[in-house]
Length: 317
Image (cartoon, rainbow, N blue to C red; front, side, top):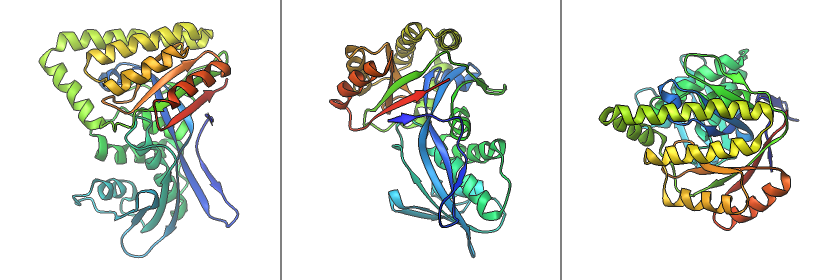
């Protein structure tokens, strides 16, 4: 079970080492439209990524035991991970960072941003820097741009701050006040979602038929605004209907897949108030809204018949 917390930071373990963390996330409403200035609503998870850093000698090095990967920071490398790490470490003292993820990569749960925030904080801790949330987000965004081109900033912000937040480019993120617990079940299609490719696909559609895509984005914006109002009023039934409508609009942008639709149908059949893809689409994860813990149990059981990875996420007021 996953219970979201207000923020991610760093914690000291018994040996005196500092473990830095970054959180995963799910987008409830508004993906893709948010890239073009519209609002989006998302919630953080309590799991994501962790990292430890120590001062090194020579080039800075990033070790990812979970993937059996080690790279050196190099802005001119052909390896995106090496360039992303270089974007975080900059020109300061060399650091050796060991990082691990507790959520699947390429699933729309913000794994890369969680790693980016954790790595940024670990680098800061190793260098004795006081790294605030804003700086951690800024460095994680530099990391994210290497992988995703034009990220919205949702992943990096929630990786650092957690909770439920409303996002819009050019405006500060707004924490949404809840009237009661928000319980969701997240299931992985096991079909990797290439965020950069999906964002590029929507960009091409927008160039080819700007009026159609603008209409879809305006519809998504209305869902987001109503979603915030539903959360603040404690009306989960209304929020669920908005998730279903958002799924229809995302499918119209060719972002859904048969595996996504199968999980959405399974969740709805088990009593979900609403269900949709979360993140870039083209695979990745589905998020289903539950009315209460008992409903979440039924949804989780149904999704486990269809998915190799199922998580429960809960945010409390």
